[in-house]
Image (cartoon, rainbow, N blue to C red; front, side, top):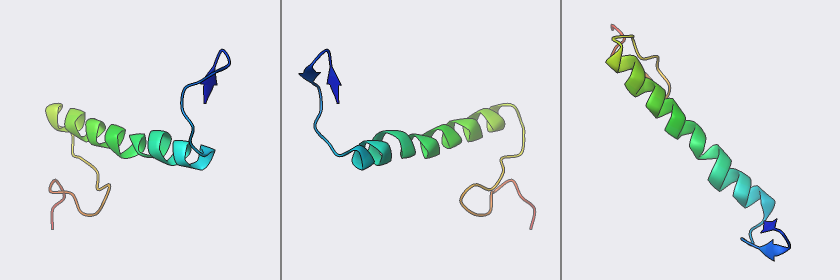
Length: 55
């Protein structure tokens, strides 16, 4: 990654994609779950059964 001809970071593109983009998805999914709980909305199961689901 470079900016104005100056190298900011040297890393293969796939590593940048994995570390900076794909790792953000679970983070935002967790934030959405917090907002749902604050608004008393049932949280959907994202990684398995949710505690909001009835057995």
